[in-house]
Image 1: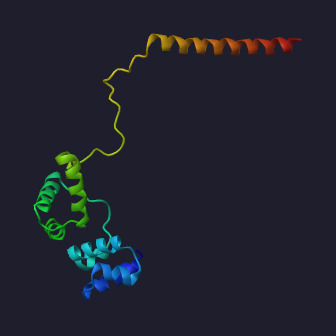
Image 2 (image 1 turned 90 degrees about the vertical axis):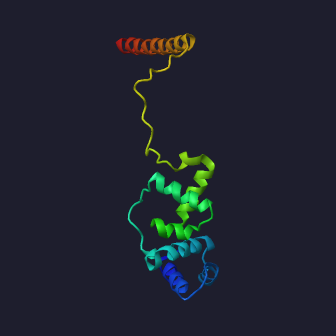
Length: 156
């Protein structure tokens, strides 16, 4: 949705239009309008203001919100109470909770996992190591043979 469409949608929400009617009127996707409508119900006209950066929520807050959502409270009411940026967060957390349990809500380390320097490199099988060494020696002999052939040709 463009900025103008979001502003028009919020203006229609203010006068009582629902998300489906707004989506049809503006000719945009229902999901986008529904999410904007949910944010507008939580944050009012500040739903149009984008927040800088990603906010990190503590595990306990996520767990409490999800458990209360599963027990029957609405996402919008919970988002208002916990001052979340969007009620959609609770739906995402609930999916993670259902799929992975409490561990799905715990913070994950960011970036690529570090290699553990304490683990020794795995030993390759002896036969594989010898074959690789044999291949390297053959290539070395072939290279030296070509160097000698070039030298002999230059001396003639």
